Length: 182
Image (cartoon, rainbow, N blue to C red; front, top):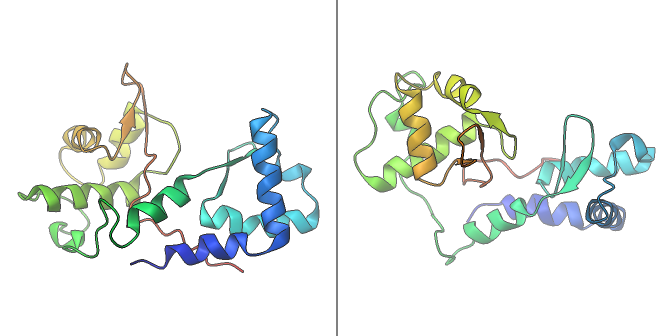
């Protein structure tokens, strides 16, 4: 089992951070999100581990919102949980100089490679146009359109019905959620 849970628990183990998380949740629920600029110096210091753990995310304008994705990822990665993967093949073995030239034949390996590439190339919870996704994936191989379609089919990447906007909402086993902070 991964140690990703440590970053989430450490982020909530401090009373000040826990209170700040509550304030972010409350403000978001009232459709009046807090902004980094609204926070005191102490709160801004305490915000780092919450952002690092994924419990709180900030948009480009500095508006803060809670994100339960970090908690979902912990549940999905827990030993004995459905879909938990204790190991598996190293997805990099299918890459040549960072490029995916041949897709793995086994479904398990293919899905693992798709999750790996998505975690490396596509930001989490950030809306992207079809063109932006294709451009980001073009670094990985000759067929970025096919790769994008495979990611949608595998549930690694989501899209709007009209196909104009894509986003990655699932945290994978390859995403670093440790936060690395106090």
